[in-house]
Length: 109
Image (cartoon, rainbow, N blue to C red):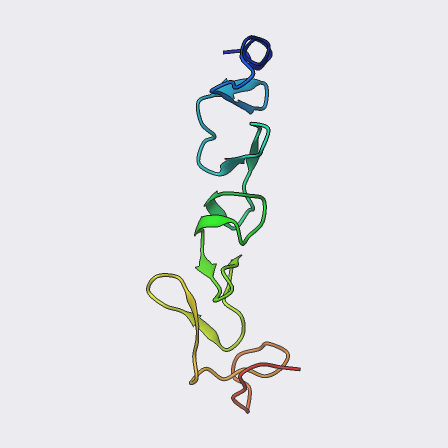
């Protein structure tokens, strides 16, 4: 259905605009905004409800405790079997973020 035709016929159109096409729902990797336009999700998201890495329904890689999808867990954190970044008390980091530091630290700065 052409979006122009749809929007002229019905105020509450049951379609969402994806580029120049109208779709019944935004595809995986896209979300619909308040006016019915599909937008691409953040690069770290599989599916999402908005544009940010905190709006992901699922992450491509890992999720921090704050709900942020990331490509790698922060220093001193390791992913668990679900992909959640958890604090690893045995993981040694230095404050430049490199592994194998001489002191075990919770965080730098």
